[in-house]
Structures are given as C-alpha cells and as structure tokens.
Image (cartoon, rainbow, N blue to C red; front, side):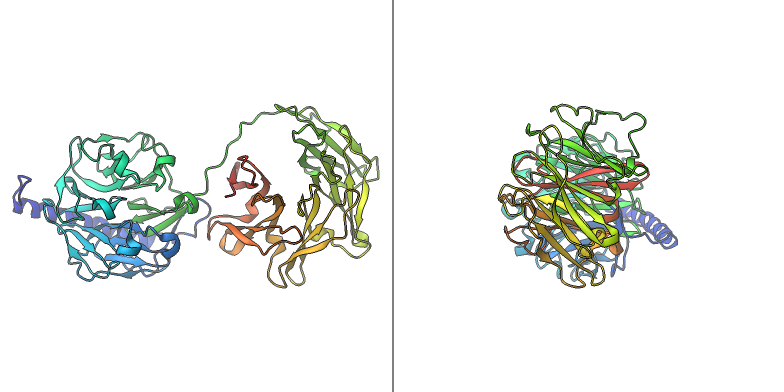
Length: 608
C-alpha cells in the first residue's frame, strides 16, 4: 500500500486479525440475542425491534431516504449480509447486493437528492467505497486516492448535487474527503488524535458552517472548518467507544445529536455535543453500530438504531415537556372536603381580563355543593371565596359535569353544569351566571325531559361553535349499543340553550366513545371553536388527535392532526385540555401524561 508507510503484508495481517476478532464478537452477540427474551413493543419513548426479513442482525449502518415521510425507505449495511432495503419503514427487508463484491458493509449513505438521482454509497471493510445510482440495485467501486480501504463510515454533503462532497472514515487512516462524488479522495486529519473513524455526521448547513462530527474509539470530535482542525466534545459521554453519530436535520435550531456506542447504548446531546445523556429505555442490545434520524425529525420524532446481533430498533421521541415554574398559592388546611369531590374549571369570572379558577366541591354527607372561586391578581390566586352554596340536601356533586363560558354575552364567564337525574334518565343544563362577585342562583337553560338523555354517556365542553361571540355547550354522546358517537351542540341565545342538534355522527360501529377524551379550542384560528378528541387505541398503545373543525353550523369530518404511531402513547394515561399557549391566535393541545410511579409530564402540541 502507498502513502501510509505500512507494507501490504502488515495491512492484510491486521485486516485478518480484525475480521477474526469481530467475527468472534458477532457470534457471541448473536447467541446472546437468541437466548434473550424478545423485546415487547415499545411504549412511549422506548425502543422497539423492526427486523422482519432481515436475515443478518449484525447491523453496522442505518440510512434513511430524504423523502422518508412519503417513500418510507430505509437501508441497512450488515456484516456479512451486505445491504438490505425496506420500503415500508422497516417492517420488511430484502437484500440489494448486485455488484457488491464485499458483503461486510460498515456504512450506507443516501444522496440528499435520492428521489431523483437514486444514489447510494456503501463503505466496506477492505474494499473501500461502492456507489449505486439505481437505488441499490447495482453497485461499483469508487476508490481513487483512497489509501486506506478499511472504510468504516461514509457521509454525504447536504449539497451533494452541487458540491459532490463525500466523507469516508477509516480504520487507522482517519477521515478522507472527496469533492467529485467519490472519484478522488484526500485525507483531512489535523487535530484528530484517534485514527479509527467509525462514523461521520455532516451539518445540514455544512456549506455555510463547515461543521462535521466524527465518532471514534476515543469519543466524539467536532470541526467547524470543514475538517481542517478537530477538537473533542465528550462531556457526559460515559462510553468513549463511539461507533456512530447522527445529526438532527434542524441542527441549526435544535443543536441535537445522537451517538451509538459499543456497549453503552445511545446518547443524546441537545447542545451541539457539549453535553451527553443516555437514552436506552427498551434497547435490549447496547452494542449500537449505527444511529439514523428521520429527515422530518422535528415532526415525527423518529430515530433508528442498528445493533450488533439485535438488528434494527426504532424510537419515537415525544416532544420535550413544556415546564412550568410551580408555586403553592393556597392551602386548604383541614376540613375543606375530599379531594376527589372537587372539580375545577377556569374562566374570567370577574371580567378583569384574567382567568380565575372555580372549584365545585361536593359534601356527600349533607348532599350539598359549593362553588368556590379563586380570583387571580395576575401573579397569584387569592384565597377561595364562596360564590354559591346549594344548602344541605339540595345538590349532588357526583351527578354534576361542569364547564365554563360566557353564555349570556356580558364579557364575564359563567359556569354551566350538566346534571344527571338517574332515576328518571333525565339531564338538565343549569347555568350559574356571574355578577362579577358571585354566581347567581342556577337557572335551567335546557332540560331533556324524562327518559331522553343518558348523563353517563355525555362528555361536556364549551366553546363558541357558531362564532357569534357567545359560548355554547358541546357534548360528545356515546351510544354503547351501536358503538356510535355523536357531537351535539347546544347553541346559546343569551338566556337559554336551544335544543341540541347533531353536528357530527360517527355512524354505527365506527367510534369508541369510551376511548375518546374531549376538549374544545379554535385550532385553525378562524374564530369558531372546534372539537378536539384524543382517541386511544389500546390494543396497539396508540393515540390520535382528531380535530372536528366547525363550519358554523356543523362539524366537518374528523381529521388526524397528530398520530403517536403504534406503541408510543397510552390513552388511558393521558388527560387533555386546550388553550392558545404560544399566543399565535390558534388553540393548542396540552396533555398530562402519567408514566407510572410518581412521574408525570406535561406535553404541549402546538397548532400549525
């Protein structure tokens, strides 16, 4: 071999020694994988295996099509099995190796213009780089100037169609660069203290920021000048044997990276590599040879990992929980009543433009209910004041479903309660209008009449569904016998609710009311309130946020505005509400998610 001061005999001796060693490691890992229990399907923020048709589980590399959201195409490079391709997001795999003379494929890289140029690169150990221009169907070698053919990784410039730039990481030879699509190569190693370059990641803005990351046997290195000079970035990376690295497609804004290690699993950095933390829940094989990020990571939050002996895993990251600064603003002391007999709603009950809190407290012994109001002064909540008291034996709080809105159009929010009379199968909508300092005595704004409404089958909300400036009532009503669900709207005329009308019907057998959680908001910013329904599919641990936009006289057919994907969200562990949390004029969703034990997160789903 020329250019590296080592004889051909010495190189091939090291090649034989290296291949013998990794073959032994792979055999041991494969045996462990066979003896280990199969991983269960992933819950939220966990890894799950996707290996159907993948006959070689020693996965060295995972590569994703730039148009994955539409073509769902993936490639993997394996040790001894060559390249496999999936066109259904990893559910099924098939080999694509014609012309690939070496099936020990350490790396696969996809052209940013893959949908039009069909270009792929494969790095092999001992025979250098191969190129395909037909989506992997045929391969040919491209190695001129590549003085080290022990290629462990290949990476493509985001502007490849114009700059033709590639990078190749090698065993003992450092990193090489090509600016003509792989036809010619030259070394760029200044400051790189480890010559074993297992993986290369290129910044999406490489043409302007010159940023690259490499994963080596000595950790992660970074350059901001196209490879002229490198420096280590390893704080928190407890396993420095970094096998792979992937960079977020929106790195310039989220500065997110992932690293796969040889026994430590996957690590994540959200500050450009300055600090790292492990993300291994559900990952049954911690020998991670490759990590790959979805091109639409900011929306689908999807990550893939290739492992030595365990095949391919996928992981859906839920959005980072929005965090609030908590402070205790009131303490009941002893005697306020049972916690589970209190239900709270929010509204501007005194008309000062700031939302307050109202709590309906039930006292079962005296069969009494009290409406307490905690007025907000903008920085804290005042101590609660009784704004209405039913008196003994006059109200069953357990038969009450509460919501709030400005039902009489006086710019002060009121309280509405749907009250169920179980003995007569009757429901009444009582409205407690606010005077600004108290709630007036309840008035029946609507009554179903005996035998006409199942209170237990009603989920209550409020909103201005017809965009007339007055709040109305909305009910999601379940017909259990026919497995049908309907959206009923009670339009307010300012002094009463009109008879409810059906604004949407699922049709028989088409909607599980029990799996639906109802909220209201103007999600599309058109001035009319819409229905938001979080629907849980328990058999596959999946949730979909369906939005029924209002036309002013009816709800349009539900459209999926967010989908967790299978195995990623437990609807039973979620509570939902709506609000314009970013002040852009469109309502967003918020979910309180319970992970078990004492761990709860709040997720915000912003509307686009």
